[in-house]
Amino acid sequence: MKIDSPQSSVLRLAELLQEAERAVVLTGAGVSVPSGIPDFRSPGTGLWEKVDPMEVAHIDAWRRDPDRFWGFYAERFASLRDKRPNAAHEAIAELELRGHIRAVITQNVDRLHRLAGTERLVEVHGSIDWSLCLECRGKVPLDRVVRMIEASGGAPECEACLTPLKPDVVLFGEMLPEDAIAEAQSLALEADLMLCIGSSLEVYPVAGLPAVTRGAGGRIALITQGPTPYDVEAEVKLDGEVVEELRALLAALP
Image (cartoon, rainbow, N blue to C red; front, side, top):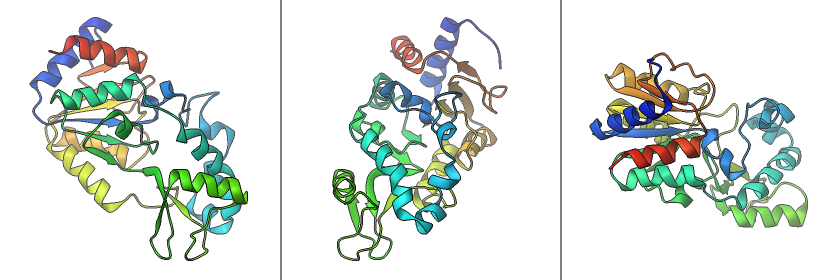
């Protein structure tokens, strides 16, 4: 990767987006940090520094002790319910509106891209919008789930089956939704530019999507703080604060 000044890097990324015909964006937790949502691995603040994900966010933990599982997730869900999109989400939605990108693939479950106005959104890790009954496949919306937890103090239950609900997010030990990962892989294969924003690109299989784009002859660009496995291959990397970098990018585009 060629090292340029921050301004020239922004201009180069703007050129890449203008040249591209099938650009897609891939986002991770760093996009939502300005909304007050901690990421998972940053030293001192990362969510997994406080708890062992295999104890609280594994499908076996949900099966083994739904009340303990929801003791962790209830707080997380309640905290996410009132979070709002930040300027990074809005800038990405603006890129789609202007026709610079064709879709957004996200690892995030916080639904903030959708609230910001992104139209074609592939949520490969699911969404907090719903929780599911695995018996009858019934779906319960987030606000109702939070109220059920507040009322019972334990795991929310399907009112028809009286079995614990599971959040419609991908837990450790689960496969990604087939339709979502198939669409993400198709977009990556067709992309002539993949812009990865706010992701360390360490969690597979999503972390393999930029390699799909590169393997098909497309380019990679990065807006993220900290190293990624794709730094050397990237056409350009912006490593400043995500909101500032995206605002500069929008300003450099027609």
